[in-house]
View (cartoon, rainbow, N blue to C red):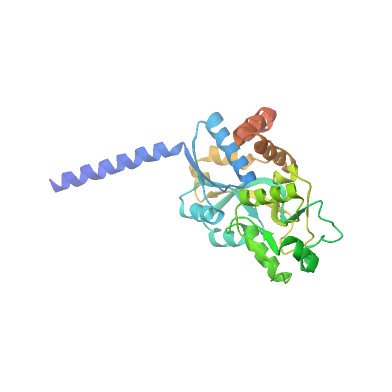
Length: 288
């Protein structure tokens, strides 16, 4: 009886696991962070996977560091926001043997500190100028940042050390908190320095400029890469191949992000799909 029970239990377990595997075949779990570019690209990818390729897509919103851990642990299938080679180098170093790059999503990305154009360039053109007494007073010795796990937050702390900006506070917030502070300052024509990156809708909404970074602490141009957990490509080559073909010109992406701010991400995704049918057909089929 014990032998029969064990056999039955083993068979039921095998059937259960087999059923779960079949159910999971058409399901993809994508990690994303509440940054405008990440939200647009992720929701665009979700829409195409669901409507054109019959997948079930679960979006998991979390900070960047847990996304890398989630891929390495196999709890996430894909993330669409790996800034390389510099910004996320420390995260990649920890998980490089457990993740697989699928392809470059867009190029000409960059990080920096930005100010509104009405801030006089003759007074504040470079990060080095932040040490001027008049600039400190205007800025209340504050750099307005985003979430603590972001690559630009880590690099901004390095910049404060490199440029001897010990009197300044890097104000930790979120992407939404940073843009809200920027818009509030612009309405009042107040000085502000924000941690910024391109692509971002705020460059379409406002006249901004990057401060010069002569020591290149904040890096140079980056590429944004789709990453998958180890084994995802072999298990689901159709979805992996589709994601590997996604590439968006950065100007198109910034325009779409601005549309999302003016309407919604869902409407911006719909508009982008309607205006780029041939491009999206190629992403899905691989046929030119």
